[in-house]
Each structure stands twice: as C-alpha cells, then as structure tokens.
Amino acid sequence: MNEIKNSDCIEEMSKMKDNCIDLIIADIPYGITTEEWDRFNSFDEYLNFIGEFVYQSGRVLKPHGNLYLFHSDFDYLCEINNLVKNNTSLINRNLIIWNKYFDGCKNHYLKQRNLCRKNMTEFKQMAEYILLYSFESKTENTSIQSIRENFSEYKDYIQSVLLRKNLKYNSSEIITPLFSLGYKSKQSTMSISLRLFHRDFKNFGCLTKKQYDVLNPILNFDKSYSEILDLYNLGKINPIKKNKIQTKNTFNNQNKLSTIWNYDEDDNKIHVNQKPRKMIEDIVIYSSNVGDMVLDPFAGSGIVNSVCKELGRNSISFEKDEKKKKKMMK
Image (cartoon, rainbow, N blue to C red):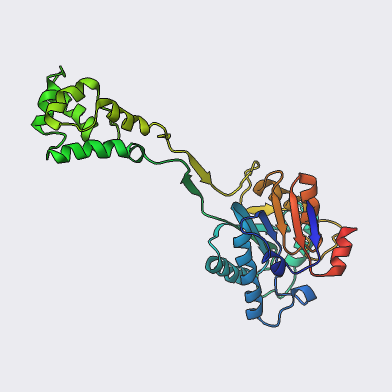
C-alpha cells in the first residue's frame, strides 16, 4: 500500500492505532518563511502544532521505529527537541547535519557566491539539520521464570520438612546420615546438602532414593519418594532457560555514514523545500525493512511515497494542499 491523502496529518494520525508505523520522515513546516504552508500567527501557535505532532508520532511509532525531523534553524530545533522530550518517551539518537554546499556539489558556485558577499555580519547558513529519534532499547524475558520459580513446589516442600524439624541444610542431623553414604569428606557432604536443601541455591538437585532412605528416619517425610520425585519433575515441564527479546531501533547502516551528510539537491524540484531523492532513499534503507510502513506527514513533493514504492515499503502520506497533491500524483 502506498497512499497519499489530502488531509491534515494530526487529524489523521489521531485516528491511527498505537504502534502501527515503522518509520516517520517528517519534513515539518519550519515556521520561518512567508510561504502559506509555513505561516503561523505566532511562535506559540507553531510550538503547539509541533507539540501535538510529536505526541502523535510517539504514539503511532512501533517500539523499533525511527522518527526523522528536518529543520534549518537551530533555535527552533532546541525547542522542538524539548517538545519531543516532554510529550513522548522517544530519545534523541543523533543530530545530523545536511551539508548542502559541499566541495564538488552541483551548486558549488552558490557556495562561493554566498561566501564572497560583502558586509556579512554573521556566518552564512549552508546546512540543514535532521534530528533522529527512537525509543530506548529494551531486553525482555518472554518465558518463564528462574529455576527457583520453576521448581517452587518441590523446594517449598523440602523446606517445610526441615522447618518442621527445626533443622538447616548444615545441621549435623542432616550431614551425618548423608556422610554415611560414602562421600569423601564432611565438606563435600555439606556441598551435597546445600544442593539438596538450600532454597535459594540455583544449582540444586533432587533427592536420590538412597538419600531419601537415610534421611527419612530423621525428617519423617510425609510423602513417598515417588511423590517427591513427581514434585521435582513438575518443574521440568516449563523451560528453565529464559528467552530474551531485544527491542532496538531499526538501523541498517551499511555505508557507515557519520552525522555529516553530503547530498546534492535535485534538479527540477516540484516543491521549494523538496529533499534530495538520494537522501530519502538512504533514510528508508537505513531505518526500515522491506514491507514496513513508512509515514510522511507533510508530503509536499511526494518524494517519500515514490521512494517507498521503489524500495518495497508500504507508505501513507498526508498533504493538506489539494493542488500539491494533484501535482505530485501526476
């Protein structure tokens, strides 16, 4: 599915289920130009809009998902980063710098022209910024229990027998009859008793028939040996080893890119703020897998939708401007 809707992204995202998106590529309004789509009545109105957007992004993003946010003004970026912190549980992974006028780029002459202007009062803006967010990596245990929990019924019974006689695993009343079975020393016998009777000892074992027979006159077991063995075997029904699932953000960076990106702007752009196709391709490859769902909340040129079609990703894009939607669909 690769769909573009003529609608407001926040309105549409509020209807989405939790944890349904693998990657969000958000070329958000910058709020600093005179373009109609970038115009807000006040800075507070702008921040309220972005705050609601990042809240919805954190809600619909899957635990392994990634959010890319574009902007060109560093002060605005700081405010946006605070909004993400306050409205979601996403954490900032990287601040990426898109170097638009790198040496050798197609628009290298613009770099030289901009840098040669007279009466400059500040450094010339030659880059844009990309904030990358994801959730904190987690490791979860999906199956059971520790050994102690698996064999709790058996251990509870053994412990109750000792408590009834007011004995401990190292009591002489326990060690002496066990030693008579031919163990090498009292110390090795103590280790055997520890394995048999200490409730919190992980490397424990089950009573043998001989051990049961020599201890029964002292402990007066109220269960037969076969019944005790059944309690022990009950713990074997559940797996002792824990299965661990690690949740971390999707990251398929094969080119070992740094946080400085050099991408040429595309020729024949259909939107003034259109990002390079090669950059979008790399983001989709690095941060999603084939069949994943990618969200483009501010479609503009429709470049994300087009790239996702080519790379085998599903996508949904939102664009409020009907004219732009018609243009990108041609």
